[in-house]
Length: 337
Image 1 (tube, rainbow, N blue to C red):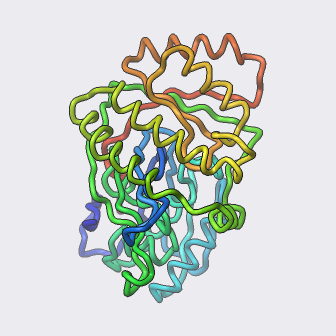
Image 2 (image 1 turned 135 degrees about the vertical axis):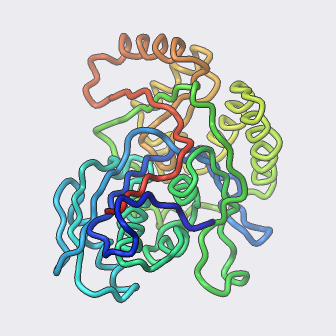
């Protein structure tokens, strides 16, 4: 992955005062090789979103401080990155907005990359996004968040190489990317009363799950290469949705023992997705471990019609929250001053 371009607001010969970065959430639509028999495991497909977003401003300081939601998390990331880079002094981090944590939208990866890239830019360390990911221990299974940070759009990563094939820590490489139709609205379904699997719970889940069948991995790889990617090139939402539904069904059922026994983590989100399926929606599912669900529509009218029906059915449920957004085909915005 190439080093990212930044927009400079002053003379590059002078010392930088601050770095502002805005990066958006991502949908993780599914893994396609959890078997790993060919020497690479996981492999995933996902998409950058316009909202929600993380927006931070980092400036030089004598110590490490932060303000805003997620301040302590940001300080810990900054200290870890600065220690690896051996930079002098500290930084102050202003968090103007952050992606909801533990919602399956990649909040941790985006915050880590944003803080890491800001420090990298501020102290002119000239590292790539992938190098920052390794330093912050991100991208250990999926390269989707790294790809959306650096490129935007639809991302497919090639999985993580087995230890025997990797001489040093590496992140899953982006093997395909494409612009996602921005006139296809995307509905996000939030369950505010539920958190997705994360941290030690996630590590335990992967450790305890049974071997993933090679035949299932072969099926999912075929759906990604021969259905999902051509469908995006031809703007064929039903075909794209069929591929994503296959990934969601196979991997969701495989992960069911680790996420409460169902294909999706949240029972509320499950009810919403079941209604969308009954209404003939082609593309829907759960992002990562959830609980956030998603659905993709062919037009704004269809999205608003479906949302109206959902509000009529689930209106009294206070934990449910719906947001219509679109794909983001641009990389993260980096401004230096």
